[in-house]
Length: 239
Image (cartoon, rainbow, N blue to C red; front, side):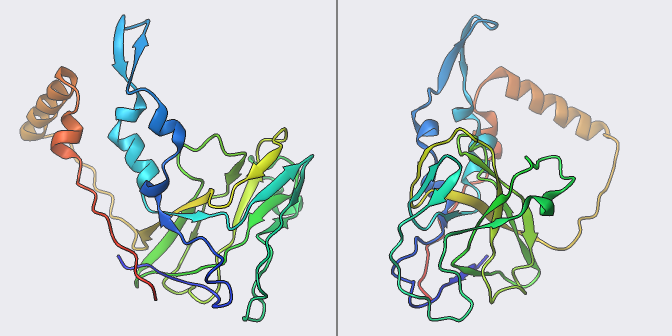
């Protein structure tokens, strides 16, 4: 999968580039213990740090990053971002804009307030037949907002940036959102609808099920050692 990011040439030296999600896993995941004592089990058990599906979900795709430090005080947002004027007409210069609350009327996640909208400074081009799935950074509940998930046909919509609306979920937050903080986790998804096939276990599938479950319960690391696909690092190229 080749993903092409483009930006206004006047801003190229001022923007943090999107990065593979695996490159900016949070500090809390790195520092959390691999094992913790369970009163119920009466022994040490593995934490989610050793759960490949948990970590792989956080490592999947790429992250869009906040382009500058942003200060939040008493519900007000401010920033000091000295960048040149974009050379492209109609291009945003502000890192943030808003959706009025009425645009979310009836949505169960609306808090009755305006939604923040992280403006994009990169266009994204995918290969034919693929769309871009954009969601809140996976398992990142410490962030004071919740991104609204969306899908964009980025094999066709390639000439303008994708903006990322979010619900501000922590009204008590006061501080600085740092430049480079992940604001959206994105990954390509095929646009073709899947065929859903339903079958009953035959004897071979029953035997395979019983064998796999027995092995998984008998020792740790079976999924990681035998079933987890190796992730390959894909280098970035300037275009």
